[in-house]
Amino acid sequence: MTEDKKPIGHGGHPGGHPMGDKTIKEVYRDIKDSPDGKAHAHQYMVNKANQLRLVFWETTAGCNLTCAHCRRLDVAQTLMKDDLTFEQSCKMIDGLLEVGKPILVLSGGEPLYRPDIFDIAKYAVSKGLIVALATNGTLVDAGMARKIVDSGIQRVSISLDGIGETHDFLRRLPGSYDMAIRGMKELQKLGMPVQINCTIAKHNVHQVKEIYQNAIDLGAVALHIFMLVPVGCGVTIAEDQMLDPQVYENVLSWFYEVGKEKKIETKATCAPHYFRIMRQKAKEEGIQITPQTHGMSAMTKGCLAGSAICFISHKGQVFPCGYLPVEAGNVHRDEFKKIWDYSEVFANLRNPDLLKGKCGICEYKKVCEGCRARAFYEKGGDYMEEEPYCIYEPNKIAEKNAGK
Ligand code: SF4
Ligand code: SF4
Image (tube, rainbow, N blue to C red; front, side, top):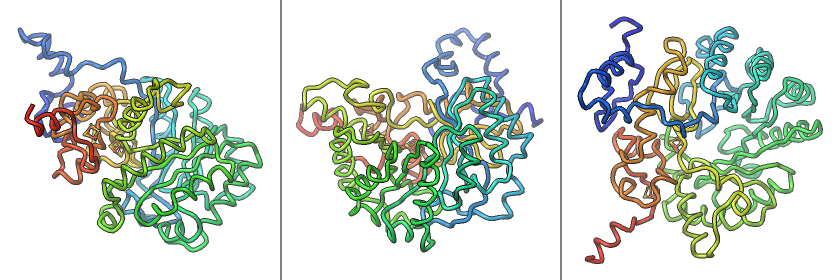
């Protein structure tokens, strides 16, 4: 198979997506020539609603920390030689512009490890992209903060996975909490909005209220809580650290309640059933979900992998998100627009009718979808299977159990 004949989708779709091993041209020809081609065309069509809103780019594999829950098992200096070069990075950014103007999140590894990170940020900003930086914060001193601000980056997220030693434990570096706080303060002195990202797992679930209050006290603009996905190093700590589904439900319910205080922007990330909980609670309260009542959460849905977000690895591989290892294509080989518009895995993720198990019959599936990465890891690689960490019993199951 020549390079240009390689299929863009390599995902091994569990349901046997009709794109199979075909090239995009072959798929077009099939639709055009087949008598029932039109009937199937929708399966390949670009859903206009699937606008690319956020691209998480692993700018480098290098990092100064070795966190217990890192999605990379292979973080190593040696891998950095595979990082996209500056020229390749600019080309990749140009490719994004053919699809839209997503927010570009410079992540890693640790993005501040890259010597040319600010040149890259400036390039993306010059092309009209909003650029954000996701960092562990430990490398940010006054000089670094100034460079971040001057590069045109508009928001910085710093990962704080607990208070003090709880954070240090997961980051495997004593003092890393204090270093991150120092970095945050340096950025805030220069007026940079700083968001706190927090992975909730067994080691810090007892601190959730403190974490919330701490984010407010630190003057963060937002607190995004992230529910651990058993991937990378997360696989090895999953048994110890994954929350029981009921605890998970309790945390999300609590998070919904504190979100109403509107003291800080709150967002549950990679916790898709938050959006089911939000609707259940709003119904109980007799209120409508609007941007005024529920902020950003009113305008989005649970899992956005492949429908509004994607992840680009340091080697140029494109994935639905950083936690679902089903490759949609590679920017070294394929045009980003083709990957986004036509890859098999993205087509599947955009079609809630393909969801299986209880997610497939759930009345909330269009606003939730369950975490496809958790399904992948716990259901033998089938990313369309049901979310394993949701306690909800869809109406159809409840009715069947009640003998209706
Ligand atoms: S599959 Fe969806 S919910 Fe799960 S980690 Fe990826 S983006 Fe988040
Ligand atoms: S069953 Fe699936 S779609 Fe329904 S709320 Fe749970 S995770 Fe979401």
